[in-house]
Length: 114
Image (cartoon, rainbow, N blue to C red; front, top):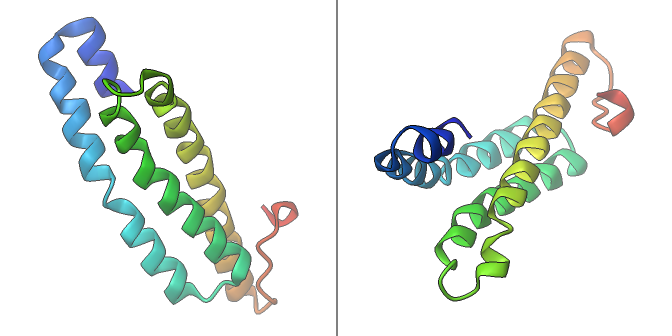
């Protein structure tokens, strides 16, 4: 959000910074999926990580279709906020799984555990 703020309020040249950072960020789900697979934290954690990967993959694509379908492209910031909150959910599940493993408990990654 900071980079788009720079583009809107400081200088329009900073819009490219937002665009390039978004495409780089598009690669991050690969790391999340690899970590989720290695963690063996359960099906729920894996599905949340897979959902995060899908949303993060779609976010920059939504921005690219603004000329053909501006109404669908308007979902770009909504999907970005959704990806942010889903990333927090995945991270909290990962921390809960890690603390359960350190405590010797069974891994529980439910919403109640976070």
